[in-house]
Image 1 (tube, rainbow over the protein chains, first blue to last red):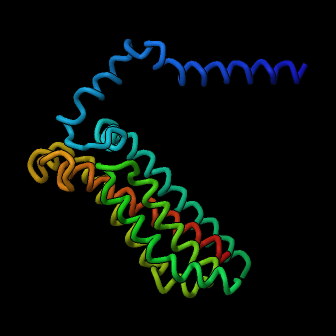
Image 2 (image 1 turned 120 degrees about the horizontal axis):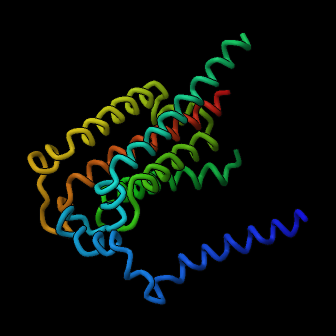
Length: 90
Length: 131
């Protein structure tokens, strides 16, 4: 039973991956308006030649700011754990 | 560590740093950006820390300095994102495409984010090695 469920989950995941990878080939991408908007307008709006960078830091800057917050929190958390561990050992 | 590892790291360290800074500075022109550049810089310092020990790595950047830089750069990043339209239209207007000054906002955000990523990773490495 467990193996059966595992195989079904694997098939569903693989199907999703295949759909995402193969959809540009069969013209399914034409309906994605946001992607087309980025592709057409990002060079004039941001002036950056790298489309990924312009999306990450310009169109979705707040999202990336949250990502940086996650990193900052990770560093602070490691610092806290290490310092408290050192104090307790003394 | 071994003398082979030490010699290779000693020769390779400046080039790793140079490559990281290049990726940070050209994040808006070529593939790459803040996260890969910051991770490359942090990996250079991590190589020094692993092969030569923590004391030699603190000669590159001290732990207190890393704390201060990370806090200041985080503040700068939040300020740039908060006053985003002011920074875009008044401080740094866009220039010619494919030049270094073509998208100054993306450039500065890339730099700030990369420095923040590298400082966070360096801090994590230092603290875990000190433990």
